[in-house]
Length: 316
Image (cartoon, rainbow, N blue to C red):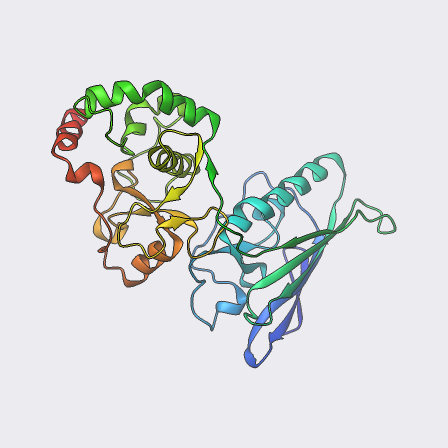
């Protein structure tokens, strides 16, 4: 394998993983950004370079793109590294957004990204140092340094729009669908009924695929609402009683919250809110790995006789 390779106009430099001569990892990427309106198709089967011979990306991590697809990056092993899920979806995404904004104001944005790895886990990046300039290499911007590590457990804050929907409609939902029980927890099915203002009406509960970002936001939000007496900010708790990481952490690792398909696609599972539960990344990935579809609680709405009536009437 050559030490450098040009992919989509970016030069990738790789190095051997210490003590693992057959493993390689990206060390540096540099080149001009390309603003793409239509992102390249993602291929979930492509592994980060360092995992091509070393198994799967572990629970709590995403296949993180060093150069975003929307900025000209490729869904290629050399452009992928394991990033903690919250780091990839929040911290790193904020920098990608910044680069997109800068690209919109300049004719050219040139970036160079250096990657340092943990010594104990040499295929997991510890630090990303992002250098960039706008057409003049003699006047670079101040470097952006990002470090990824699991942080202490934090509370989650429900987005205002979703919170307003919950507060406004919870009493009606409990009266109409939960036998007027003020102490009953709202089910995720709530959003099938009152999610219209949130833009959920076009989401299919039949076609397989991934839960949308809005669906995931709703599941996180209702979990927080139920477990914190209706407060807008509070702790997230796994819906699966046999989850070894019941206390979920939005900036954690194995305890990072993920929306799990209760019945997996391999067993005809769908993207319905009735097939959703919030669990830890460890639980979700472990369940996916053994492909058993077992473990954990069934959807609360399926266990409840009153909710079975709701489902029937809703489908009618």
